[in-house]
Image 1: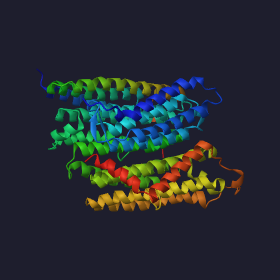
Image 2: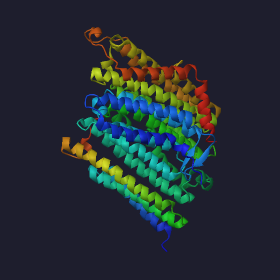
Image 3: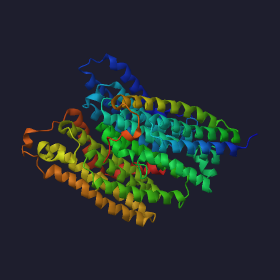
Image 4: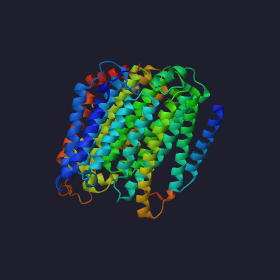
Length: 478
Length: 100
């Protein structure tokens, strides 16, 4: 039996870090606990990122650990994204007192990251289900972590309710797929399901409900705005980036492995869902007054764009979807980082509370400019290259209508991103005395924002090495 | 031997009952019970198929599902208790502070 333990190197290190945090937590003094825990988690995650990147690269694509996980570049690339997102989230959590003083918050974050890593790698229904739940359950707790805050507990509960229901539907779909195929291995299932029947398509739709919840695509998106609004901002950022990217990793691997033949019904289903997701996400975002809800609908719309790459189902399509997720993780984490920093001082997530932000903190406003223009898909930022690639992949496979819908939607998106920037740059605070209300940026936030903004610009200008990585990842699925 | 279709029919009935329970009932605890019903529908069909194919995959899957369901319910009940403490109610219709 093939047992390549290198395949789970990042996860093993994450478990070690989680145990280290739990053991060291009681040893920290009360006044330095917050700082120590945060740097331990963020530093440990950065170290894991480095070690896994240097030592854990897959030599060839292989099915390992009893056929449960696949060790390939696709999984590897996504694992790097998730660990990076977790490291940034750990930095962002440091100045949110209710989270940062509790070692459990960091351990839950690490547990969710382990789940996401396994989601990207799993090649078997059993493993896939366990990975999805390992991701979801810690995230339910994190969303409802602020137990003295009604909104947070309500967010956690809504997330749990939607999550438990969709995962039960997903599981029923899995059980039927197991019944039709007689195996739980994804690659072996493809052989048995080569000629789709009405029943196997029905099972596929059930499975799609579960994946749709994780990626928050229409019509399984209802939870997203409520949960992002109620959960503390760093957690909302983690949910909207890493958790969504994990959903896409599963969606890509599942659809390309189990239904490798092109022109099949799932492509048309996903194309329709993609158009609906983009349109509904963008149109509802236009009407939002709360920045976290606006970012939630914008993140729904972004799932729609990334779906174009999934629908294309080619090497370029997969590479573009992976690239989209990479750019999206950087950009949206930056957006949520800014909301975390500003929200702490302003004490409100209302869009109009951002009036005159450019005078209160010029650097924060500059970071916001970069993040929002990248979300809108403007060059020279990462979001532009990502959109260009998914649209190119769509055109290459003849999904012209879908691409046109995507372009129209990007234009709608520009409106509400620029409206927010208008409040930040052109409007003034009520008393026009912004200088007396500065927004301090503490060191962890400064580090996180610098890394994210540099990453967004790097992806948009010097994108060849990153694109090569995504092509390498995509090639391992074909 | 009872044909596998009988098990599947029962499983489909259980799943539909659970689904309707989730959609219609407004008591958070009853909704959780309905979700359990949906999970058990999946368990039943997994075990039935497992016997049909004479493999253990499905049965082992069921053990994992039972463990996961217990974890999920533990988190859910913790959240229900927290919500009940502040609202004195676990009616889903009253959880409406987040909207827009």
